[in-house]
Image 1: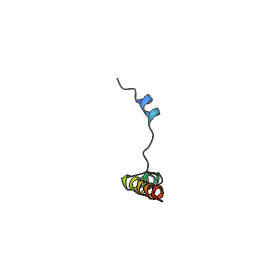
Image 2: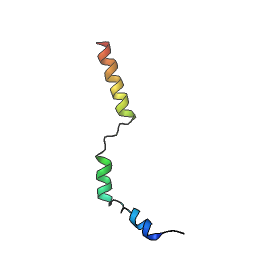
Image 3: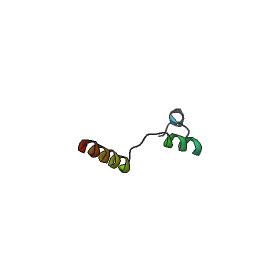
Image 4: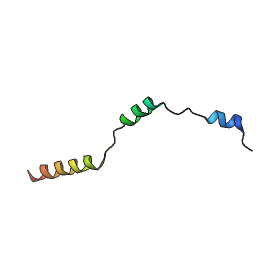
Length: 48
């Protein structure tokens, strides 16, 4: 059986849309374009 009182203790409300958007945009995520730029910069500095 499901213990509803126990489940309610575990409940955390979901973020509002604005809060979720802010949390997502504030993360520093590296994507493939960032990696390629770093690799190109590294090869340019090694050639010099």
